[in-house]
Image (tube, rainbow, N blue to C red; front, side):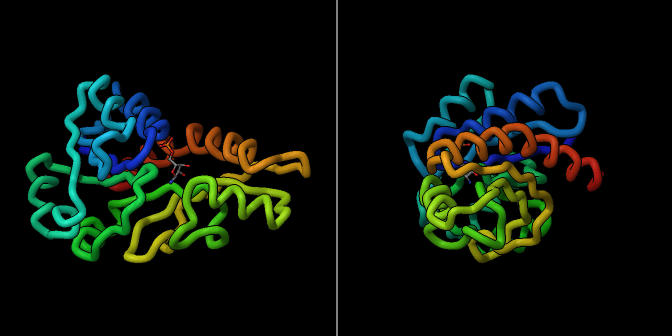
Length: 189
Ligand code: GRF
């Protein structure tokens, strides 16, 4: 049984889907939720599922000692689900090809520093794109630049607003993120 840690900063709707997906799995379990925000909704969701959770300060997160807390929890795999801090090099190296992120657009477009949340969907709308989608990728030291693992697209119409684009994209995230993680974990067994 592989042990997943989810890192999230926000409401945690993706984290919830992943917890539900693996609740009765024989492949993996969500063992830990890490957030940088004391008030992040994802912490409540972890409590509802009886999953250990912790809040980290930026200095603790940037210190390689943090690996010890992950080791104590025997974490095999890290999922970033709306986690807004850049991942420090020590962590990228320790979890090389064992850490994935989801981005709410079709990378390599609409990624990089500052491209998160509604900023992404506003930029997609401003460019009058005919499609948007999701990208699941490995994590390296740069925002949104790790190797792409999976993409799914949705069609956009001129009537779409940044808000409706967000809804279409979030639906794809909820549909695909957990199954893609499961496939990756099964291929690593
Ligand atoms: C998602 O859109 C994800 O692509 C991005 O952050 C958002 C997290 O949403 N990285 P939620 O907290 O899972 O609802």
